[in-house]
Image 1 (cartoon, one colour):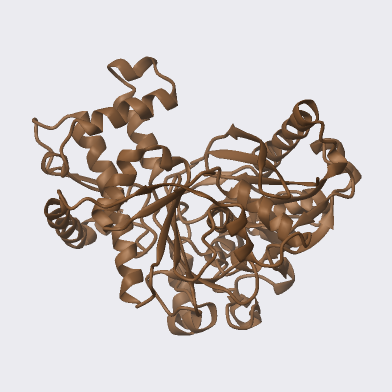
Image 2: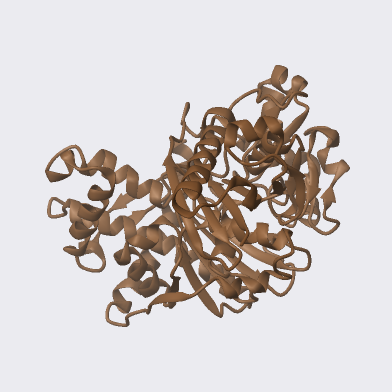
Length: 508
């Protein structure tokens, strides 16, 4: 038997999984870290102290446990695959040393001026024709331009602008690469039709030579060096695949690889990946590729989800009452029990979950969070339930956009840390009127990375072979009992945003 190792770097947590050729999960580990918010609208990670630290910690711990519990030697681990939050931008010098902390995905909204300027200089329609996406806080191109304009000394020393998975691949192999799925979110730099960097669009943002080599996610791009071996516990010569964004690996991990499969990822934000039969045309969502050639996806994501529930626990729940002395997991359980005491509709309380702006489908970095309808009658129970319902309305908004494109959703698959919260899942099914299936293994992107390793090694021939690894454990079906309440609240949710949008901009 041979084995593969998948490791994923998330917003607040990193996970690793050791898997055998049949998809059996042998060892899994996780480690927590912090999201740095040095200024309002900024979100950063330290590539060395967070990404590489977590990777080496997980790989050493997992390889040691593999030996101790299963007698698996490092030499029997044939490949390692990585994923990370995306797009993230970390500029490195010619020696591969990070020149600043990594600027993260759409939760970092610092590049609004650069977005406006690029839309004016290059033209919004031309950008859309080339990149297949409109510019937003999710786009990495404006973030690179921000570095060039605001930190010129960093820009001048930058040899490559790497993504999260690309930085880890460099640390393991010395190769500077980026997978094409992640590259598509480097809008407007990537031509989604030609599958190459676009020199015309890069002009004025960066040099094309500062962008990494393009590859597919499952490609073997190098081997673990002696230096990396000493730090990670992996054997020298272990194959390393390119890897990809956490969301795509998460989709693969639950078998969302067939046309019509929709992955709903419940993490610090929510993310959606629908496998499409063709390259979609949409300005409200994101057209994208897949891990291997010939497949396409419609993707989207909210700016907050788990990060908002964590905010509530940290700042509204844990400051008084029983939750003060609880750890995070206990506090989440307690909060959910509170929310169950509030009726559907949260007693007339409505939440706009835009506490860090919003990504799809409104693309509004200046959007603000709103609790609407608060009275002295409302309690923490109502507030937390309203948060769960507000996030569910944001998911409904995205699903409505997908449905309007006439692309079928044949199956919705739930994954991520939020799957533990059955009340939240039921809110989503009831509000979106969709059945969600939950696989036996919901470890997430690390498990998907393991399959990409198996694919790269030739153990399997196609992404659809992931069906051999995935078994459905449970279904969450929509209830009709409270549908009228939710339909009314969804209408109010949309009207509330439309009528406060200008005020949000003014407040900014």
